[in-house]
Image (cartoon, rainbow, N blue to C red):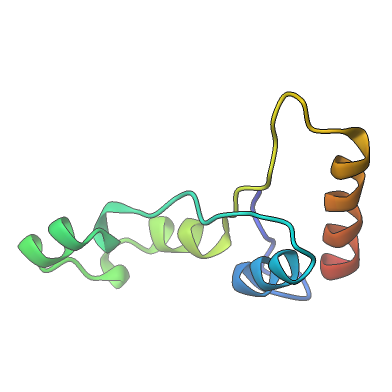
Amino acid sequence: MRVSPDARVNRDGLVDALFAARIGCSVHYIPLHLQPYWRDRYALQATDFPHSQQAYEALVSLPIYSSMPDAAVQRVCDVLHATLG
C-alpha cells in the first residue's frame, strides 16, 4: 500500500499504528541505494534516486493470506480508516 503524501500520518506513523493495534506489517520495498553492499561500494546517496526514495518512504506491506478471516480483513481496514482518515 502506498501512503499518500497528504495522509494524516506518514508510512512510519501508519506502521506504528498498525503495530499498536497488534497488526503485523512490513516495509517490503528497500531500494538498492539503501542496501549496505551497494550503498557502501558505490557511495550511493538517497538524493541521487529521488523516485526510489519516495517509494521507499511511502510503501508498506499489509497482512494478506489465503485463509485470512473476513473479520481480520475488516480489522485491518478499520485501523487503516481510523489512522489515515
